[in-house]
Length: 162
Image (tube, rainbow, N blue to C red; front, side, top):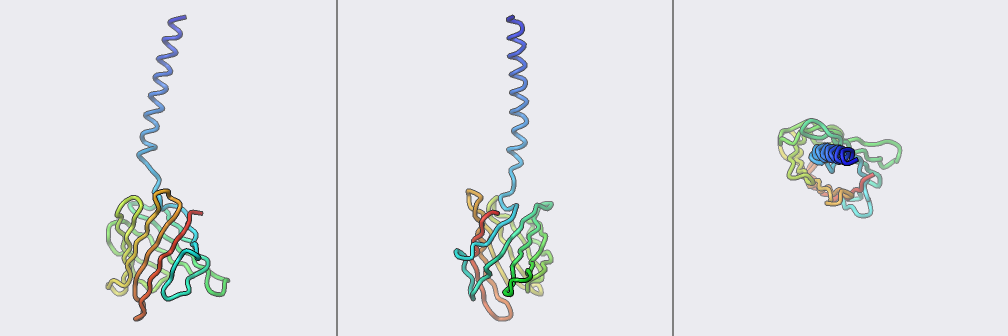
């Protein structure tokens, strides 16, 4: 009987050790807090000049050392969406962007919860912004400032995870 108990204890210890080893890689591969779909809270957001959109969705997908970002905004006639799309690495280099007055966008990862974005037109900075996920992962704040055709604009967009 003692032999069975000792063997059972050794087996339990071995299985427990294997579970601990399996848990370490999972913890090390924490999911990026930006990934997923975010919905604009129009009541909490500010757009200058206004008014801002009533219906906007931002989607972040993982790409090698970067992200693919898509913004879908229902247009004023509530019939079609205006889409902004880019895929960029966190290396500060310029990448093409579509659906906006910008030509390129560059990203820098400040920390797990913060990304800085710079948009350019014909090689000159036209927009700067910060995207920041809250510590609890439930809110995304996108702050942008720029100029388009001589008109300055800014926004603080508050989004919640879908």
